[in-house]
Length: 289
Image 1 (cartoon, rainbow, N blue to C red):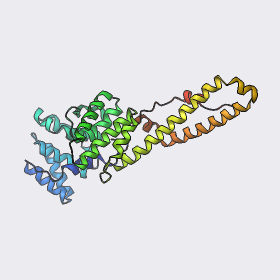
Image 2 (image 1 turned 135 degrees about the horizontal axis):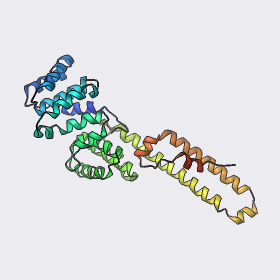
Image 3 (image 1 turned 120 degrees about the vertical axis):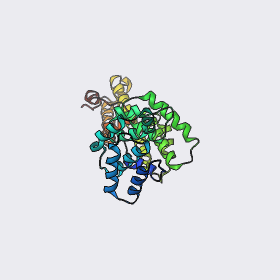
């Protein structure tokens, strides 16, 4: 969810895995160190885990959690994590799929991150980390499948955090395909005590700005068409005045358009499904004397 990123995905991942019961004594020990703030001990054992030939899924997951909390950046740990992951069994890899998704999402490596998304049986990390990656890569079919699963899961979950994740995924998807009423409905149902409040509140504002931008752009198009085919009767009654009025209206709409575009940068407009005009297209909208 890079577009708004209310929280660091590494921290979100670590928060939701805190308090787990581990099968591995090493994993439990590392988790205990994290809980009481013993950074050096937690990192020391994390390095030891990643150097093991065979690693338990719990051990890998808590290693990822440790790096998320104390490791400053997954970039520095990427080689060790990938080497540890690659030498494990298929069963192990299935169990730590969402950990790998979180790692690559944090690294902003969307091309690899999407390989770890399960759009048919998603867990909350698939939505938390996956929807943004799919939308940024224009994988709209996969995003649609993920969104449909979000809507289905939303009807049955009572967990407020999970509700906030699902609503954020839906808000992002509906915004991108310009189903703005549905996006607003998702954002407006956001539990504001949850971390994604910024996504919801700013998402609502962005949609209203997008609609204003659409209105200004459409107005400029209508005025351009009117200049090409002016009302002859009005031209005879007040020659030149009607053109001056049109130019004034055009200047005002262009001022609105440019102001909104300064707020809704190109990247945000893409997230809202708004086609980006070229400089040539923009020039066509510029009033002429």
